[in-house]
Image (tube, rainbow, N blue to C red):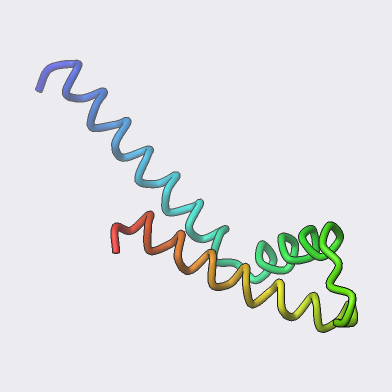
Length: 75
């Protein structure tokens, strides 16, 4: 195997590992809660209290991260 092929193989392996780690982070409850909290700090829905807004944003983030996971996995 030549040096170029070896480097390409190593780069692809590293990219796969990074994608796997990104997907783990994206799927974590901590990420969902943190992102939903950031959205909740910026968006106010007047007729919904803060706790319900947080629940709503957490569910929305969960749906979005599931969709992104599908995109990354090619589904």
